[in-house]
Length: 499
Ligand SMILES: *Cc1c(COP(=O)(O)O)cnc(C)c1O
Image 1: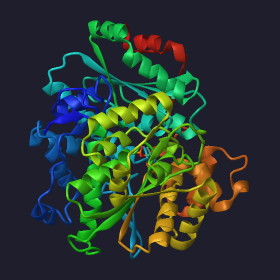
Image 2 (image 1 turned 90 degrees about the horizontal axis):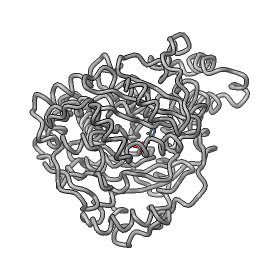
Image 3 (image 1 turned 45 degrees about the vertical axis):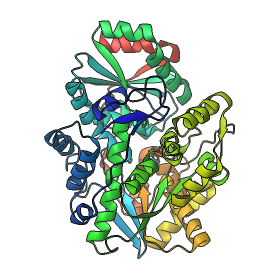
């Protein structure tokens, strides 16, 4: 299988190269040239099978330049009971007869990013081997919180690779900071940067784009790469859990083979929901993909009007991992919606870059409506939903998942659609403990309490145990305390690499 650029500006490459490059060098994203379709008999035969077996089938259809044994090895290293605390990796929790929560947070860092970042480093290290790259790879990550820790855990101790994570000093929660700065592994490094997330991201982007600096690193035996969600290697593993969830429901006789289901996806960069769309195109019986946004509702507006407009206030919400105004993976979706019209994609994305907005044509909007429905939740509605889900089902959802639940209940009210629905749960509620406790017990319950007191309080109220990735963070040794200025990150890289 070959991968092409959404902007038609690069020769096609195989999977290993797409994963090594991360994004298309002159701009654009790698997408499969054609989406493979799963044979319906094959699909039936997978009902009730385990996560690893389903992963083997799906990944194999895309990674045609990897040997089956290589894919198997990546799967074994990623999806095992050392990394995931549930034998199903992503278990389904039944809310009622027509709605199920897909818990995507059983990996080491308590957010759904682990589903991809536990396996992607192994894809990358195989790719480096296959392509005969002899320099050491240095992964640079700018993070606003969740991605940094998930990437550190994924790349920790992977041979031939070093990873350096930059986060905004004072700009992440105490739990998130400690999750990162207490990471072990002999190839992981963490730097706090004075500034906000945009400063971190821009500083890292500048290093990627600095040709002279990249040549200097190459001379010293290093090559830079990236682990963010525009890398095909991060998107691909997410397709698997859409198949897994459906086949688990068939196995449990909740739906019959061929019956359609809906998926509700709390959305930021559009990676997760796009994986669901690829699953649909591969032949998974999906009725609607429901795209849920928070108050940064740039996608809700886009799907309603056809105009994408990022010229608006950036709102800091209680679901920070969805606080995004430029949804990078939408580009891949539009590529499919326009029938692979790279000219249109280049034009629209160019306009977005220059003017902060673009207008899609009516055909594209109509095509989108056939599979996708979109809505958003306000801050108040998000907290209220956490409380009502707990009261009604005795089940605790995090702030991101709550956005999905709220948008789904609006959808049911507006459409009357009773199709069995899977709600993606993207984080463990303890990861966003402050907002969750406030939602359940009111503002007074969090006043004057530190993160660890709040975790203990949540345990009492919900009857859940604190996720292992968040436990004892206050007693683990802090390994990194480097604080730097945004203009100095090249110096940091050099010091870390010992140049
Ligand atoms: C990253 C993240 C999201 C957004 O996912 P996208 O793939 O960027 O749409 C939602 N919830 C949580 C908890 C996340 O960490």
